[in-house]
Length: 362
Image (cartoon, rainbow, N blue to C red):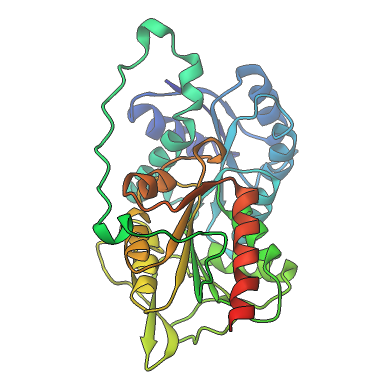
């Protein structure tokens, strides 16, 4: 059973959040707080697995409460519920920097009649609470282990691959990230040296306003230029591109010129921007490509990573023990596409050194 604390200043929203989570099954709402002070108090009292935290609350706002809660041991995973506005997206980035595991964007009052948002809420709470909940389950009540899905067998092209990821010289670097990933993305981008080298394209699962704020935040702390990617952008050596939320970003090779196409295709995409779409199109550009897949729910990136290695590239996946949610990196491993498995610090050093090597190679 996943134990959740709901924090929102609106009685209506607290009711909707509680009902949505408890009706989903396997989730218990252990308390509800209307302000940040009470949120901190109830977090200490109940030791929940997951906290849903509104940003705007009286007495102590969600960011202030988050900062205090992050000092708790064990630290619960906090899902920020932030408005889909410019102010909300900026608050979401601050929350990520303070240690929030994920952010859920909402239109004011939309959660009450928004089935997609309700499903998203439940999915994220389940993903965040999955491992923490195990410590509360008595042995007799523990769910029987399920057989793992059989791993997709790597193709012969991958079996023949013998690239050393630490000496590989990419001309293109693509990164996929979701729940728990923004702070790692920021660390990786901040470590990228100026002066050219392989362009870096990042697909982070977030709404478009949030990805724009992410690009702006990263750009303020980077030694190189950061773009919120747009349709028709040319890829420039050494620059970083953050894919816009709500769309897919495709990398195209047009007579040797690399450009981005940003659209809503394929329409049946589950996660926007799709890591699979980014990686697959990168693999087809026809140049040495390095992929990095960070923490996140779902399996987005597994198929695309296999495309990269089968095209002669390399892919690094974040290690299970360092993931907030070990979903996307696991998909890479299960597809037989992980050239290496690394911690966030190792991934940061890997990308920085790869950019340096690609600059020298150029």
